[in-house]
Amino acid sequence: FTTFIGRMTTAMTLLVNLNGRRYQNEATVRRLLSEYKISVGTAQRVWQVYRHQERAAAEQRIMTLRDIDKVFKVPTELKALLCQEMYQKFLHKFAILRKLLRMHPDLAPAVVATLSERQGVPGETTFVQQA
Image (cartoon, rainbow, N blue to C red; front, side, top):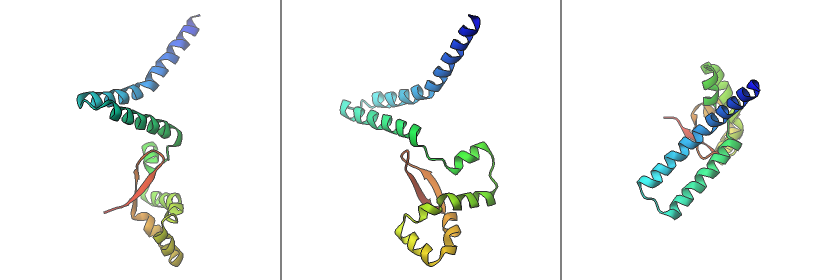
């Protein structure tokens, strides 16, 4: 019986911890809506977008190099190779880059090296040129 109670307590603690971040985020949204006295219609839209993005983030999160960097320090040369292999396929989605790479395929590593990753809406990755 004691083991059963211990397992139940552990399971409940795990659930509380898993939901803690979500409750904190929702409290932040509620506070913003309350402090600025946002209209009901706009507040409903905010919650709709929040819930949609929360579900999408949980279902379709795209892995990035930043995720790997959290696990271990990736040497610069290896990071460049990873970038090239990860993003090569995305370059062909842009007409101007597709045309350039058809004419000069050897430029692909240089093009990839000038890009940096920026996570946008869950499931959407955009690329911006580094300064």
